[in-house]
Length: 335
Image: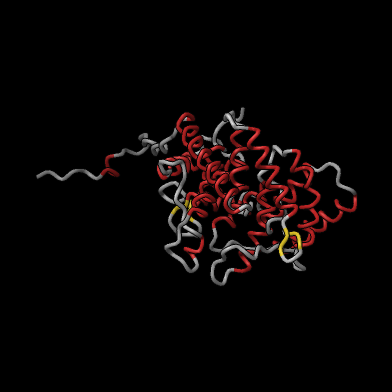
């Protein structure tokens, strides 16, 4: 019997070593087809939610509007009349909804995500009520500079981390408001600057915890000129936490989630990653593999990491499908 030589010994010094294989890559045709199915699901889901629940809510309508705006910018045949109607209704709801005699904005993250759904393509109805959101965000900021969403699921013993996530989302929304509302009076601009300063002071020295979306948001703020000493650190760490299957989990070390994977794809592409980036290719393949026949993705509730490990429902699937769709669309060329 002859022993096979060790491979390491078979490679002579200086010999060429074959490069690592490239991750599998999906074509634009495959990505567009998957995104098209997902958009149809999101539209139908939001229409049913609007008719039944008659509210916008943070996990539902904003992500349909956001996905449709991304799709329109990439040449999808979006029904603009329906999109304008949904947008007008959503912004009007947030500007007029009341709870216990106070205007809510649809509650905090609903307002934040609705503002962010207009990134790059604000509708007239959105611009019209932007001053309402500016005032609302100012009223909602806590003394320590943070914002807090009381209705969101939080991990046990992670209130500070949740407040940091909510604050980073709000900072992104404030930047969107500043960018598109050219009619702001000087006093409002000074107020927004003060809000920024207080929020940045709250976030100064903040350290990543368990949640991957914390790291993704930190990377996005860093890229958009956030006040940090090492702008690339969070993005590099985010890349390092990508799972072997191409996705990212909700918390470090957890199984991949279409929801978080879509968020991370959004951040990578916003930070300049191209479709041929290995991390982008792996994430796209993960989303294509896990998409359901109806165009949606199954997503566990964030309560799964707190108190309900088995919780999965239409709400979490719509929210996660919205993010997965946005992430896929961001890998397609504009136009």
